[in-house]
Amino acid sequence: MKKKKENYWVLSVLSIVIFIGIWYLCCDVLKLTSSTTLPGPVTIVQTFIKKLTSTAPDGATLPAHILSSLQISLGGWAMGILIGTPLGIFMAWNKKVDLFVRPLFDLLRPIPGLAWIPLMIILFGIGLTPKIVTVFLSAFVPCVLNSYTGIRQTKDVHLWVGQTFGASDTQMLINIAIPTALPMIMTGVRVALGAGWTCIVAAEMLASTKGLGYMIQQARGIYRPDIIICGMIAIGAIGALFSGLLSVIEKKIIKGVRRDD
Image 1 (cartoon, rainbow, N blue to C red):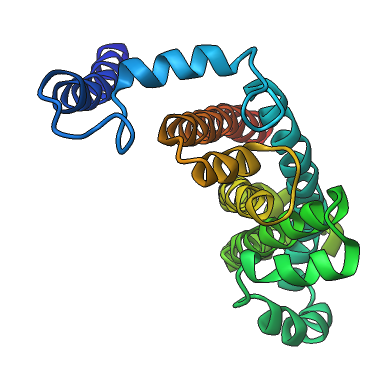
Image 2 (image 1 turned 180 degrees about the vertical axis):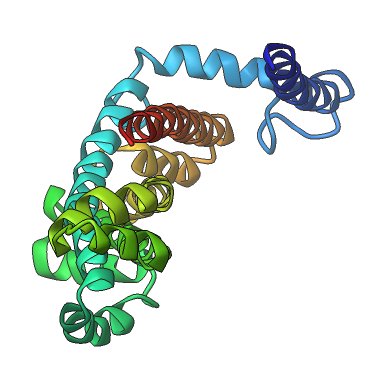
């Protein structure tokens, strides 16, 4: 098992190395593209290091942009989890709640998060509030859907066993349904993070004075593809980091629940 994991890591790292090698070969060695169109990895590394301490040309360093985006994204994401997950659970568990909430949820669900941005700007201006609300709406939907689906997939036989042993409705929800739904709930949390992260970058492109989306937009305006790629790499790396952390947390939570069972 340990050897298999090591092989997976080697293959993962190898794919990145090959990609960077091809990129370097095409841009820095063969000069198939100009540096103003697609800079090579050497230029990107130099720009990345410089941007860690330089505020040019957009008025903030790369860490400041990252911090601004994380503040908004994690705030809206946490709200989406805290409101969306319990709502999905109660919709799946209680038919009256489902009948009451579902029509409105089905109306809002197809609307992409990006479509809310103009309305949020009109309602709240260009401060933190419209971006946090937009991220919340993007994260809210997958949290509701996955928690709802997870609870609905609880096997009837497990509930019958609980009823046989005299468990109350609340006890069956807490001790049977929610533990069974945990993998789906955690998947919803991960999907919500990706949706919220994507949405905040787009929101910052339209109305912001700081953040990774704002940095990319400003770099586009002055034709700096090196800064654009640095921003894209930062977005991808942070997203991958959070996804990895959530996977570790999910495994520990599910193991803990199974151990208790």
